[in-house]
Picture (cartoon, rainbow, N blue to C red):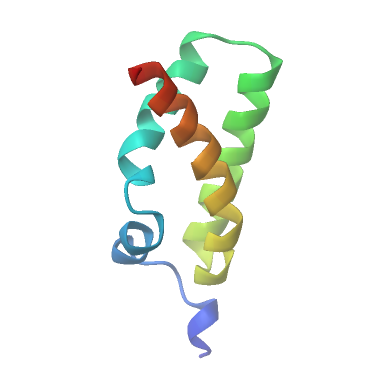
Length: 79
């Protein structure tokens, strides 16, 4: 019944993460194309926090740092 415990809507992801939503797939592709321990850890961290944040809106706070790191990798692959 508390709004923090409700599932996260797609609009909340777009509102909270802004352009990271569009850069994260590039970072995921870069991590998958260059497999090593670092990219495996980052992918696990990102997808674990993504699943948790889809369950409850308060866990979007856990997703933000992971999305920033993955999106930064994606942005660096564009340059």
